[in-house]
Amino acid sequence: METQSLRKRKWFWPWQDEEEEAWLGEMAQAGWHLSRVDLLGSYTFRQGEPIRVVYRLDYMPANKGDFQDYLQMFQDAGWEYVGEMSNWRYWRKQAAAGEQIEIFTDAESKVRKYRRLLGFLGLLFVVLLMLGMNLFFNTGTAGERFSGIGLFFRLIQAIYLVLYLVYIYVMVRLALRISQLKKKVV
Image 1: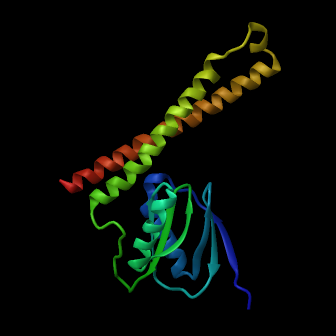
Image 2: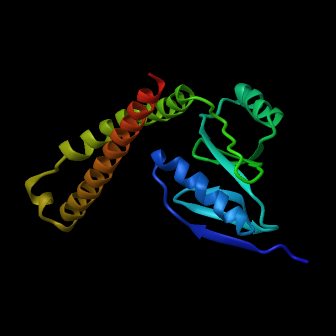
Image 3: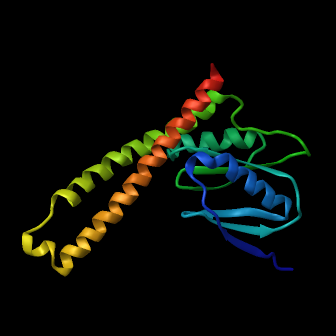
């Protein structure tokens, strides 16, 4: 008998990892178990027995030497490594009804997870800023500004600006999430 698979697209922002975990758990209870996750919210599931599975996400940049220790630590605690998407690690563990299973047992650990992500995004922000400077300050000659090439260039600038504003929004929301978790620590 061939196992069926299902591909779904669903978007989650980086600070919505708990909502993503809950959704993946609901899918498992419906008999669809995560087998792969790709960029832009593309999830692949395989059909199986409906069971209660807890999914947890961790943001951990890849470091080949440390990754094996990281992987072993979670596996020793009974977690199954499902995969990764853009440094987000997906873990799952079967759970009894009502049982709460966490990979982060305190708010400070969650703060560190979001700080790792914010640090990476901050570095990328600087790179995008440098690229953007070239894009916005290299305006071309007066004749090029109103030609087909100039109009296309303006469209690219507008798209870049919108994406840049979304990027800033994501960083602010992550900083607010960190602040919210820090209040739980105190």
